[in-house]
Length: 290
Image (cartoon, rainbow, N blue to C red; front, side, top):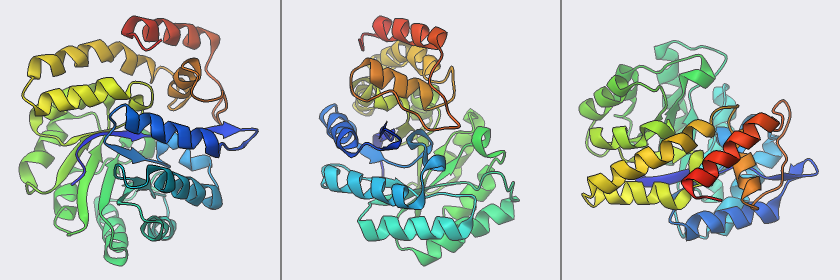
């Protein structure tokens, strides 16, 4: 249902507030460069530091600016099931095409707790749901058997898999129905996951290299595996650079270097170090982004 190169779009700030004009420009930039879908208010959108009012505002802006040109999957996850329900209900009312729900962080729920969390929300909001498994952020790994069980719920349609495990991704793809999708959540694994049968990616890196990631996906889909492989190796240094400090600090710095956004991140994140910026600039020049 959700296939291709999706951007986990950053939230630009100006003077401590959401920069609406720049956010709208970023949406247009992504669509013009071939991105297949927009995902606001994920980790790269600094959702953890947005108020509920800001969160809903960002979703509304992105849906309005996208204007149905590509799908919008609204980040709506939380470590509270009731808060997740609230945000998912807003995504539905706002007209999002789907909702991205991270596994509850900090709580460290059991596998049964994870199952009940997703089931609770899915049964109450009729919107396509993409689950998001990212143990490095949540201290909780949703095991393949839990994902497979949840895939039987009709409006749970996909998972963004960021465990970093090829074996885990392979088991999910192999043991779920063909209409259930898996999207890469680790940018360096976009190409390897495609070889397993994934549906694409939801990526922080796409913020700064949308055309190349879209081309990698489209080339693979068209059977031009050599070109997709070539782009994979070309992009690997960039993917590494985008995660040498805490996401989304490096990718926001990259967008700043490209002249697309201002320098602000929101505490407790801090701007990229001078050493990191120098390395980022060198890699971006090497790849041909600047």
